[in-house]
Length: 488
Ligand SMILES: *Cc1c(COP(=O)(O)O)cnc(C)c1O
Image (cartoon, rainbow, N blue to C red; front, top):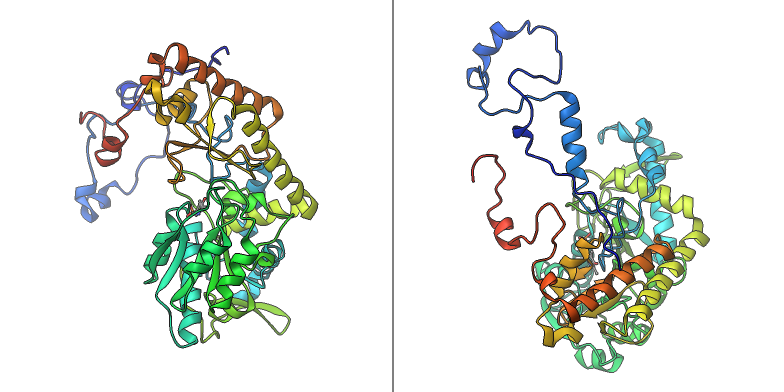
């Protein structure tokens, strides 16, 4: 395959641009100068050494060019498994920026915020319908905080029934946030082994359940991209012992509109709106991780909750069994607006179609690549598939080298070394928003890399070779970031 040409815009540091005295603004003369010195003399600097002196055009060009160095869903397929990096429709941004939403102060009296409250109530209803749950709280700010909230609900439930219990069962393939959330709620984590087919075996789960188990945390489809086919027997086994089922809903992009976690016996799930419902993510947020629960857990949901009073929506804290607040105010409102816009634009049939396309795309990739890359399971997958570096063991080329080389081919890398149950995992989630042409280009790139591994593996050892910076010492970069010009 021909290496795709990426324009690498060489760009110096901003401090290396410009010329003394050049400015990018023209402000009126400062008529407060004589007072400012008295108020905060330490803040009044006569000169600022090495401060960039640049025109507005230089500033705009500098940052626009730097932005071209990034990979994003707006520039290329971004196949991070488990992250659902689908395209985020720009209309969502327009809707979230409507002044009535964007400028609404969180302390606005309820009577003056009826539209916003109605939107929240409607979104709760949509999410309950999509998941088959009875009630929803939009408060958690991310998937992991949704998990923490869900586990707190489970603890409150058991506590109210006399004993909080001591253990939570979690499969080895789980996302790292699952055991962390359980541990934060004071539970000991017990690992349930995954069966040889990559899914949980109901019999094995049954043997692990006893009266001390508070819940099973299970992701469906699981992190290998496989549907947990025995999920109904599994949730029944938990319920038979009075234990509950927490379903990690991060992979809802493989289910929405087609199957409902509520019907599978889940008692609580979190939604990752920033994944499934198309709101921007990466770079640390903001996201939103609402939780959906069955009736038995509703009394414990975070407060305040929206109620109807005299025909108006209002926030209420009259929920004596609530676990309380888990975030300031009411959640990441702007993200909730985007998710609601997405759900309305898609409609029920649209969401189901997106799910089917996401599953089809992943299976297309799986079939095209499984002859070349070792795959974790030859079973049909859901919305993602997990390969590994297993077939290249003898060459010394590892998953990290393959991921880095993909950058030279113009694609962002898949999720690597997760799930932990697959050694050298390469976890690919194409999502429904990629065209067949893009999928084919990505497949060609991975096949070309496999060819390179066999014929000229040196190219991979130092990849990427065409990006502005090549391979970094990521640990050192994270521990000792150099953020100031001139300090090296
Ligand atoms: C992304 C993800 C999470 C955590 O969600 P955040 O929003 O990143 O906190 C939990 N579980 C799974 C399976 C995930 O993919």
